[in-house]
Amino acid sequence: MRPYDAFLLLSFGGPEKREDVIPFLENVTRGRGIPRERLAEVGEHYYLFDGVSPINQQCRDLIAALREDFAANGVDLPVYWGNRNWDPYLADTVAAMARDGVRRAVALSTSAYSNYSSHRQYLEDIERARAAVPGAPEIDLIRPYYDHPGFVDAFVDHTRRALGRLPEELRADARLLYSAHSIPLAMARRSGDPRRDYGPLTAYEAQLAEVARLVTERLGGGHRYEVVYQSRSGPPTQPWLEPDINDRLEELAAEGVRAVVVVPHGFVSDHMEVKYDLDVEAQATAEKLGIRLERAAAPGTHPAFVAMVRDLVSERAEGRPPRGLGAIERSCHDDPADCCQLR
Figure: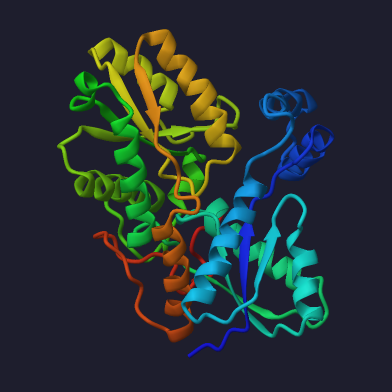
């Protein structure tokens, strides 16, 4: 039994005004040698939304929903929030927790899968923040939760709603495109627990494929589906996971597909990479090709997702076995030191 006295939400962070965009992108890319002109190019995506990333407000909305859910279900934990790349920075939040007398916290990141950026890097963020704060509390990070019923069921509901927005004559044959953030192939190969067998796919790919299968089966209707990727940012010479959603839309148009529902199953909320890469870029590609595209919402504050967080807190506190729907053996549950390494 792990007695916790606080809950911590960990997220990526994002700018909330135009003058913060480039400093934020510098934080994100620090040490990676990204040219200034590339930052300016990506910054234009944010300027379409007046420099405001949706992610911070979505974290505030989730925190409000969690506080209400915790209170209604007897979970007496104050809720804190810290970001990797923008205010409120994690180190500042850990310092506030220490001042408030927090001794042991349970944390959840806004990333559901097993790879370096989604899991291991948050563990490193926690240790770096704790090292900077005298008397910092212990912080236990909740496992990857990609196949938890609350995560899957939120996508089932949102995908059903997106299908319902299609004209009836297009609905039955609509293709489901499950979209996730592409990562370098080398990172994907190091995802998950190296002692476990994920078959012909990497752990990250296998988890994404499993969620796509689970959502489609629970949705019903026999829709054809596949996993695609988005938001590639590496040099052309570096292999990343494919196919890119825009390339796949080109191929589907040639095959005669008339409608797609894009399900951003690699994401927890409708943040900038969903709003721009899917709602702007992929939508423009689909319109050019004459394909009707509807996008399902990410979980956000869906009641099933909010209840999932409470269940995961209880699971970690009580030491219960992980609860999941999929056939993949749990990955990174106990944070082995060699899971999800960068290199």
